[in-house]
Length: 310
Image (tube, rainbow, N blue to C red; front, top):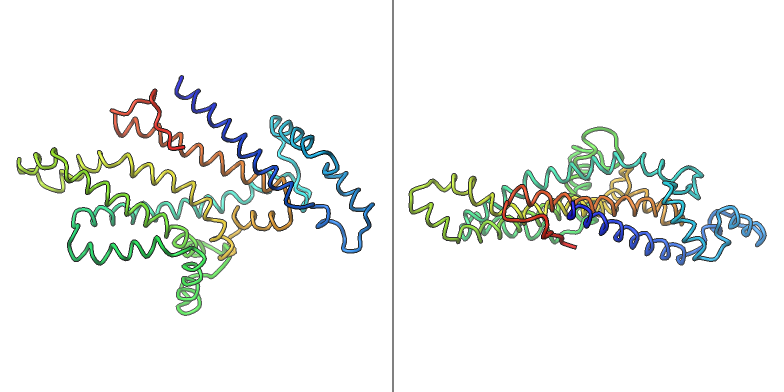
């Protein structure tokens, strides 16, 4: 309970810090009333819009009012759509969640086996062929690989739609694009961690006793190497949500990433702040669940000591 309470207090402080930083950055970036007002609006009309949105008050007063509303579960109304910000964001969450989990599934299904193969057959021709591909995958930005996939698989081959959410096939290209960087990171972490385990004494002892390599890897090596691998995989989920901004924009995927770009361009403060809060909660939850998973995977880790990665 002491560990859980400590982590909960850390989460609250982290959320407060994120909310505070984003609030002041947004409110210092421009005046939404200028975008909402007609092109020929007078100063008085703009002032009326500011009064309606509560932007006429001093910045600190706006900040304390916003914190008070958050404490009561009120995330405000969208300036552009005049709808609850929470409702707008909630309508986009299923699309981003589906894309992120599809990308995570691709990352785990391919990244861990590839990293394991690279570790077991290190130094072989297979390692020399696959490793440059993994490094190249980690070096390709999403805006480049996404456009490349659209050109090859949509324009040339006509296998998948190039944009929108028109069916199951529409998620393939965005998910593969989003999984690119994470897949390479998981594969490299798996390779380095498994190689380090294979060099330890217990592996030599098991090999000397005649234990099959496959049994050693499955029963011992993977279990001992699981902690850093699980860490990377868990944190990749939060990174995938952040990377969805670029990917969703390229593929016109109607998720949080596309909504973020649209809201930033229109200075729709409540919607942007709601998206940031949601992202912070997901990232903090991923860290917390990873800490708990450590105790299940490796009994030597004590929850009382904590294993926070920041």
